[in-house]
Amino acid sequence: MNDPLAIPHLTENDAIRLIENGQSETVEIRGRMTSAKVLADLIAGFAHSQGGYIFFGYHRRKKKVVGCNPDRLRSRHQESFKKWVSCDDFTSIHFFQVHGRHLCVIAVPKLDRLIASASGLVRREGTSLRVLRKEQILVILQGCKTPLTLNEVAGVLRDIARVANDTKDTVKKESSWWTKAKEQVLGFAVGTLLTAGVAYLVSKFR
Figure 1 (cartoon, rainbow, N blue to C red):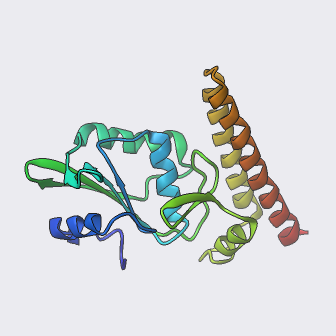
Figure 2 (cartoon, one colour):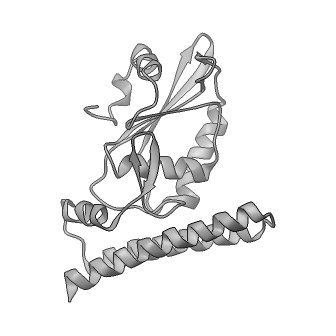
């Protein structure tokens, strides 16, 4: 993938070819819709790795375009940044007409900075999302074109804490044992991230 943002140059045939090659580290294929929270994690995951494409409107099992609702998907995309991503929108969204149905693709560029999403700091590895390890956080920070100040790094940590609190408030509204278990896992993950961030700050600014 050379330039994920060059979406006007991505033809319908290019899109179908990418989909037919299946999910990969740079391609995610979804049905008609997903939650804003999940979409935020996917966007952040690609941004912290190689960049990539998120497709909507394709049924992987049936191997055909099933279409999606452009207005609803645009709204969900905006919601993901408004509620779950700790920065302004940096993606591109486009719709193709395939056999009379809408196929959506969201292009995500690789970023040289950290962003927090619904699950904290995540990275696309293979076809899954993984919480960034301390050494991966350091690599991203060291690769920033503009060195981060103490306030900027602290801002990222505040973003993680804000997202964690928002998620915790959402989970509290549920009462099932499964959601309680997920809350515990989330707390552990966020705690690990905050520990890594603090360790970095101590090593860099002491």
